[in-house]
Each structure stands twice: as C-alpha cells, then as structure tokens.
Length: 84
Image 1 (cartoon, rainbow, N blue to C red):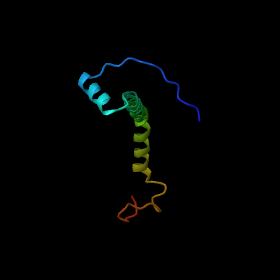
Image 2: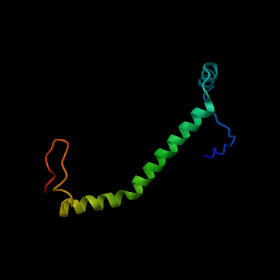
Image 3: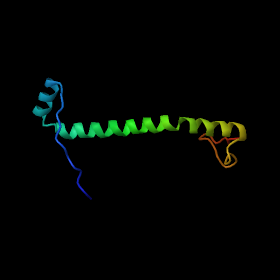
Image 4: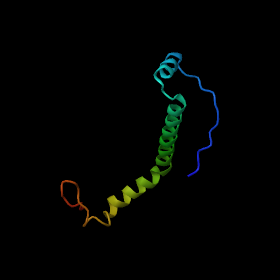
C-alpha cells in the first residue's frame, strides 16, 4: 500500500474552534482531510447523478411501458410480486 502524497496548504478557520481543537488534542489536519474527502465523494456522487438523470428517466419510462423484465421473480419487502 502506498502512502498518500501530502501537500501543505493554508486554511482560514474560526479562531475559537481552532483553539478548542488544539486544547482538546484534535488533529485539525486529519479532520480537515477527512472532511475534504467526504465533500469530494459527495460532489462526485451528485455530479454522477446529474449526468445520468436522463438515463434513469429513460429506464423508468421503458419499465413503465414494457414492465420490468424480471417482474415475475421480483418481490417487494411485503411479499407482493411486482406485476404490471
């Protein structure tokens, strides 16, 4: 496993929150890194959903028109088979 390349950067943070974090031993860099990773993952997911919205709509329309090809073996959690 290779270690991630780290780069120094400058952040502007709330002074009181930063002081509290330091006093409590919170690793600000690790928290910022994790928050950034989550924000990037969420942004990627939103972008992917936006880029594929038309495909999802087309698939839903096809299923509305033709039914689901596996409808006879699919069941809802309540047990009712999905039929048109």
